[in-house]
Image (cartoon, one colour):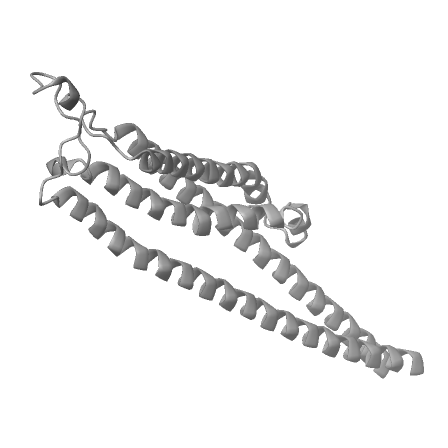
Amino acid sequence: MDYRDWVRRSYLELVSSNHHSVQALSWRKLYLSRAKLKASSRTSALLSGFAMVAMVEVELDMQYSYPRVLLVAFSVCTTVLVAVHLFALLISTCILPNVEAVSNIHNLNSVSASPHERMHPYIELAWGFSTALGILLFLAEVVLLCWIKFLPVDSGGVRKAPVRCPANATDAGRPTPPPPQNSGWQAALASTIIMVPVGVIFLVFTVHFYRSLVRHKTERHHQEIEELHKIKVQLDGHERGLHNV
């Protein structure tokens, strides 16, 4: 092997290694997108099912006068929670089969047939709806459900007086005063006190996690740019060697 053949062989090996590194990066993005879609679909199906069961199975005390704000907040929170998770589930269901079909093909060049690059914003949207916004709404759903479930206990609050045998006509619809001890109100307040720090910790962890993830991606991009710059310098040197030969 003379010098010209050696330079040509080195050039081809360098180009092929660069091509394989790009293919490996593309396959890594494909597997990451597939994992995100699977996680978001499972989480969304689970939490939306729990929210629907909670709304259907909750039993309202007809003798208790619930605050209107509480009922409206529970209805709105449940509806938005189910809608957010179903939207994430819809995105996952539409994109995941196409990604799965490509990931099961044992061919390095088949990664270009996957729609995960073009559908990347939708994948990130489904991932954010399912993990960040969906779980936060679920925590709020638990707090509202505790208030609806425990507030009527021990007749705590404004309960309508029975209409049977009223003392006079004016006292028939007048609410009775609340009892001195209200264990239901205390239980609902305790659940709220517990859930508020949990929600704050969840938000802090989410922000810290995404900032760490963005920092890691930025560092990886800088490393890839440096590697591409080194490869370009080596390719330029090999091209000069070929021209000189």
